[in-house]
Amino acid sequence: MAGPQVAVLDYGSGNLRSVVRAVERAGADVVLTADATVAEQAAGLVVPGVGAFEACMTGLRSVGGERIIDRRLVAGRPVLGICVGMQILFSDGIEHGVHSDGAAQWPGTVELLQAPIVPHMGWNTVQPGEGSRMFDGIAGERFYFVHSYGVRSWLLEAHAAVQAPAVTWTEYGGDRFVSAVENGPLWATQFHPEKSGDAGRRLLENWIATL
Image 1 (cartoon, rainbow, N blue to C red):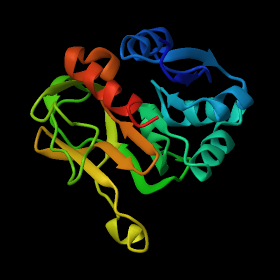
Image 2 (spheres, one colour):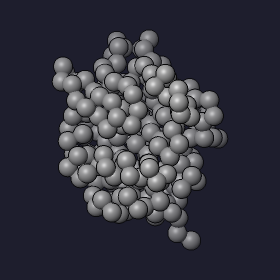
Image 3 (spheres, rainbow, N blue to C red):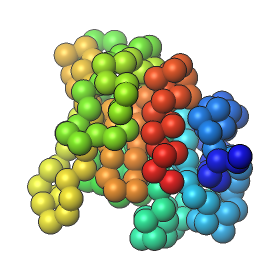
Image 4 (cartoon, rainbow, N blue to C red):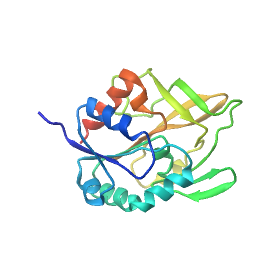
């Protein structure tokens, strides 16, 4: 029996094939696409991303990605951002002194981690937010990170009038950053579930279960 259809958005960024394989292993029927109609209508949409914030935003805009995400969320259709695919969901990013606007689904600035060694590369634990469904069955597990930038503060007051997201944090080198967010149909992870073994697979299964 085929699982729900998940579109992986192809906008020129991300470990696309590894993401496709991981989501397939978690039980979905996956299509890799840059087609707006397919991306809007699929049961789930994954927005991967690697590299620089500005380059990812340029790629996202080239395929109408901001509009695709907006239309899906208005319709209550789930979206999952991964790594820089999470970062571009925030208001803005600052890399090497360059300020770039993000997709602005959440308030927050992506900035350089204040740790002795960057990038943050390897396995680390997370502190799931209250009411998290993403980490059901995998609380206390470790996930694989590769990044130098992150969101180091969360403007909770900006969500005073709506349901508060479940915000997950990770500590690294004396600093801390947002490592995952669950906000209605919009979920995202700073780490790579497709590189995180059994825990990553379970997380993707938890997301697919919401479709």
